[in-house]
Image (cartoon, rainbow, N blue to C red; front, side, top):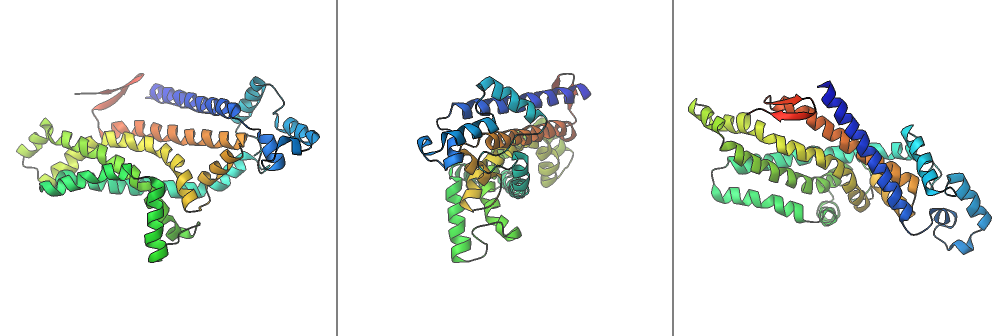
Length: 319
């Protein structure tokens, strides 16, 4: 088990290094000059004092060769120092720390809501004996995945803020202000969970151990929730681990639509002005959440299904 955890941690570090390197290369090859944008808010380079531009490039290390910049930034990033934001001058870690609580509230609420909605929909669709109701419930996840997130957000704002005034439309106004953004972000996520879990439940209900449970007199609801759902939840759990990182990316759109403070708005502003240190900090932080969520999912597998044992270097599912 220790070797397995050590290998997973090594893979996580590899993912973080790859995320940082790819983001550095992509941002370096983008057209435009972040120093000019910082000095003149997007003005033409010729309108800005060349001496000021040179001083700013030297201060932020942009006058060094690309490889030297990469080695310098990577070395500091390993120590948790992502430098200062080009657009604000504040340390990147402080900017991320200020925006993090709002985004964690949003993504945490959205993930919990997605699991409850998606899991409940899948269980209801596979449990009901009415064919028309099952088909109706199973048609909802594809609809939830296909509808654009920003459109869902705008519709919710129109219905529940402008017309009924049940929830605030914009800002970080306590728990009430969290409802509509969380629902917007949870709909496509919950739809994916429902699709995967429903398919796994149908497969699990046809397995031999379910027939054995029926033969022993177990009730339909007990078989569904205790026997089938426990084994069928493994693929859905994998999807939840993958979606945990995607929710951070999805928060960019949702926080923009609802004018909420958080990592999403910080990311959008940083990309607009080509704030390389801040964008790299956001990318690495998002990758950190992704690998942490997937590591937790891998460690939870044996707890849900004792037939899965962790052998040195690989997971094995016993028949």
